[in-house]
Length: 463
Ligand SMILES: *[C@@H]1O[C@H](CO)[C@@H](O)[C@H](O)[C@H]1NC(C)=O
Ligand SMILES: *[C@@H]1O[C@H](CO)[C@@H](O)[C@H](O)[C@H]1NC(C)=O
Ligand SMILES: *[C@@H]1O[C@H](CO)[C@@H](O)[C@H](O)[C@H]1NC(C)=O
Ligand SMILES: *[C@@H]1O[C@H](CO)[C@@H](O)[C@H](O)[C@H]1NC(C)=O
Ligand SMILES: *[C@@H]1O[C@H](CO)[C@@H](O)[C@H](O)[C@H]1NC(C)=O
Ligand SMILES: *[C@@H]1O[C@H](CO)[C@@H](O)[C@H](O)[C@H]1NC(C)=O
Ligand SMILES: *[C@@H]1O[C@H](CO)[C@@H](O)[C@H](O)[C@H]1NC(C)=O
Ligand SMILES: *[C@@H]1O[C@H](CO)[C@@H](O)[C@H](O)[C@H]1NC(C)=O
Ligand SMILES: *[C@@H]1O[C@H](CO)[C@@H](O)[C@H](O)[C@H]1NC(C)=O
Image 1 (tube, rainbow, N blue to C red):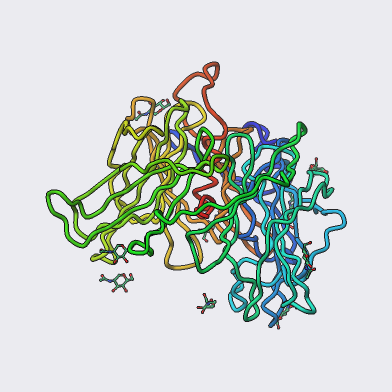
Image 2: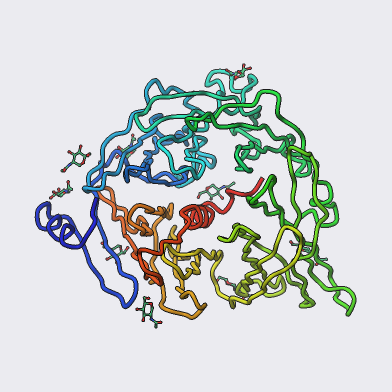
């Protein structure tokens, strides 16, 4: 583990790797270069990047095969060690139909394939591989999605059926299901009919005392959300989030073409669904505006650290100004419907913003924008102290596709893959300022972990 600068410098001299140390006033960066094989041509967008509790990180690469629209049928998994080396990670007896390695958009080399890897935002020695048991010979034969639980030694511990999917026009169709953590269990939510966003099925999974995921055979149900996907507002997206108690939360909007004194042009609502009770709570209004042609384009909510409510960033845009920047609002509310605070975070050309508490007090507003010149994203941000006062900027950085970010919760750093070539890549680490003493460690690891996770996987909470 590169714990301190002295060791880093020693490391740089002894193995001759590139290491830059840029001291900023309040945040600084280490750049660490890793050699890779040319067979590991691209870094896969299809893994929710994470770190194992021992500090190693799992990276998935891929190499497209010429003219087939598919990648080499190999997971290309590597473990990234803290001493700067990569080792091959083999999943024992892993064999899935080769169709899974075909890209969603076959003519786009950067498009993801059908295999998905996640640790379900759990800080554990386990991770999950999602795949389809589609037949390579008869793709039209009935098939569906499975999830494998794999440990950090590469052993498959379980294989669970998640639900059916279908094949059409050389593609697997069906909007992807998602696991949501509710209270102490994981629920797999999935659309029953991909053409009907109103009806969603769920299946409950629980954890054994050792933390292994298993299916609760008789606990499944149907969530009808007709009122969320009202026909008149059909095109307005529904955003979901994880709650503190037994349910999932939803944020959705209704927009009207004319605003009057009694009728705002945009309403933003929140409500909650509990699978165990099969019930929605009554929706309540979290925000309204009279500004014409405003729509809600994105929402990211996390439970607040005190565990009494939620902090959401609402992102709004004026439809009549196609290139207008987004306005970002921070809203705190309780499940009861009472609004604690509403703050304007200003507007920005960013496509997405998140707010996360830092490891040692203060918070970070992080912005992500598209970089039009290439397949990449631009990250920038501002750091605030415990008194909500601006402290410093988070230096802006351009990340190559697929824009990998990892919460290094062992060293209290945020890490990003900042450069990729055919033979190496660079992992940049960001240290963050401390606003409280080490002794008064109040950081909740899940807070920054989940926030960064959503930031880089914005569809994580969508159903
Ligand atoms: C990476 O490759 C370069 C050039 O081949 C070599 O000098 C260096 O020692 C390698 N670094 C590591 C960590 O293997
Ligand atoms: C694809 O084609 C290029 C050029 O024709 C060749 O250099 C490369 O090795 C081929 N890749 C594979 C995976 O066959
Ligand atoms: C780096 O760490 C791994 C895992 O601990 C070890 O197998 C490997 O030999 C180490 N490599 C170097 C160059 O220290
Ligand atoms: C697939 O990728 C190609 C090449 O990038 C692009 O031109 C095309 O529009 C994409 N198709 C879809 C359906 O997104
Ligand atoms: C996929 O698995 C399901 C459930 O086990 C089974 O009914 C189906 O026949 C399998 N399909 C293929 C193509 O193997
Ligand atoms: C409401 O917003 C959607 C986009 O989310 C837009 O397509 C629709 O035209 C808007 N409706 C009205 C009445 O402004
Ligand atoms: C919006 O931006 C795009 C790309 O920068 C540009 O081509 C287009 O003309 C702009 N449209 C307006 C209405 O400014
Ligand atoms: C920012 O925070 C650091 C660490 O607490 C502190 O030393 C510094 O004075 C602060 N700077 C500003 C401008 O508030
Ligand atoms: C990363 O790539 C950019 C251009 O793509 C280059 O300007 C920068 O120097 C590179 N950084 C490192 C540390 O190699």
